Length: 388
Image 1 (tube, one colour):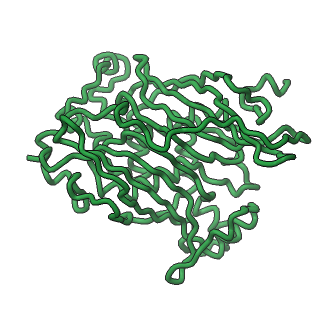
Image 2 (cartoon, one colour):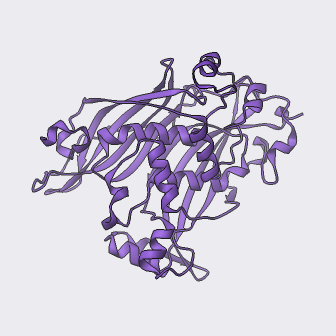
Image 3 (cartoon, one colour):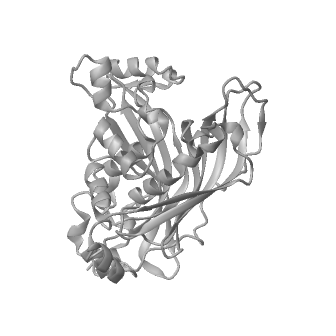
């Protein structure tokens, strides 16, 4: 079969400005949503809590159809972390199957809420390409992706840049048609959650805070640290139809899917704002690769235990904003940083994969760390008036 007949075989030269790709669809089942929450320890309790969703007016317009066809009696809101991964996964086969790395996100905004049993589908348009030097053997492709549900409502849209290989033996001159993106999402265009009201205070748990408790400059660490094993990396790829080749390649040490790293980092800090509703993301970047902890242990540590690829996360409060006409929520902008412990085995894994940023590894209190993720996220958080 000719290469140009395979949608998963596009090299950087196969992308043209204005090209539109339709990505197909996937149903988000209750099992997949709740398994994601469990595996990645997503502490945002609006996901998979139909009683709380109903109290706040998040009622599924297709509840009767889902009950009749699929036996889903009380569809819960889907974790927005899983919505992101499911939408992203739809686009992989068309855009990033041959990617070297996913570079960045910008202008990401959530739309209508997604309920268990919803079917989402997506399309992307190519905005531009960039080759950083003459004789480039890869280049970044900039696309805008929009994800809709079965009702035709937009549930997510974002711009991303992905580094894609050139055709074998072909090089490109330095050039760029990349389109500039806003530094911040337009808060006047975001979809706010329904009114928060009559919330019991114990929903905040031990670490949760109301909007008024956050101050610009505050830094909060994650409430746990953990690595990701190969099974959990692979589970998320299968659940979201993400079959990018780099994650199945032993030469790359089965480099972990960045959406899993994002999920783990978000889970580690989520108990600080368990009732938050994601509005969007100003910007985001995957700074370095993360490998499955058990793979590094097996291949590079002779089976010895250790903090192989363990991720630690923290958030910095960048901004707090009140909303005219809403005294039940406020908006906080956070910088989420994920770093991984770099053991001796982890260093060997980076060297074996020829990672070019080893000089970014730094020491702290006798441990070595490498930043793997930086996201600037925008969240709606309930105020004290939202509680009983």
